[in-house]
Length: 310
Image 1 (cartoon, one colour):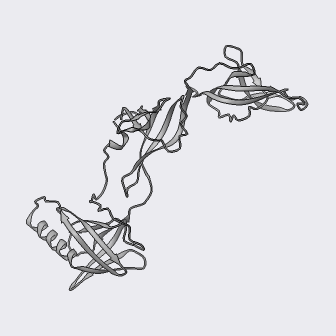
Image 2 (cartoon, rainbow, N blue to C red):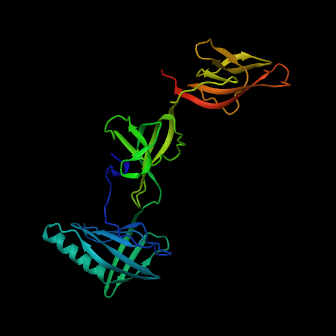
Image 3 (cartoon, rainbow, N blue to C red):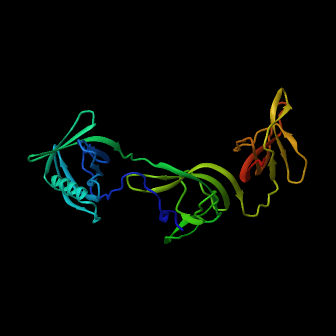
């Protein structure tokens, strides 16, 4: 199943958006309005860049509009074909007929009132909401990321990440996605990540955005050279005494005992509550500072990054 093929529920009024070139200085684009009427029926109107959607109680109305200065006209208006009771159908026909006669509009300075004006007709609307041009989070997922990219499920000409959903409840199973926003994927690493599932309500574009790197493992064989070592790092700092009392990492080579590590490792940033395995380069310093190590440790590759299990 491809992420882009996953259906989603759209909350609120659904209307068909007619694509077109955005009109400059268009204050109506991506706004929704409720008609101000004395009756209980409240027809609605919604604008995209060049498309319009409306609802008057029965069918969805759709079409396009043209805006020039204070002039406004609707065209190519149509609707779905559901049958409703006579009163709703009558209201809908009247509303649709009035829209075809609109020739201009007036928008209040505060943007809260919209008047549509035509020959011998006028429709008054109150502002309902604007559709933001941002990605909005809809859910969160825990995903496994395979160490090698694969052919995209929906496009054999592209390479995608192979992902597996580990979340509780409804699962996407295995699926492909071209990228995860914020994840710096490197071939050879398997990852476990937490992501936000986000949608842009204007164009329904979806994306996965990295929230947390949960685990990372290097899957290829590693054979240290003569000046290299593999070091394991414990998940918490401990009290130690160098020239002054301080906090130290606990470090060991695989299979050996833990020991205090007074120096830093160039290129490595310690995060508590995670255990690490590193491939490091070890070099001798010619003139080390007094009471400091004569060895310099430099990170070559992070091999393992795991949260502590409690």
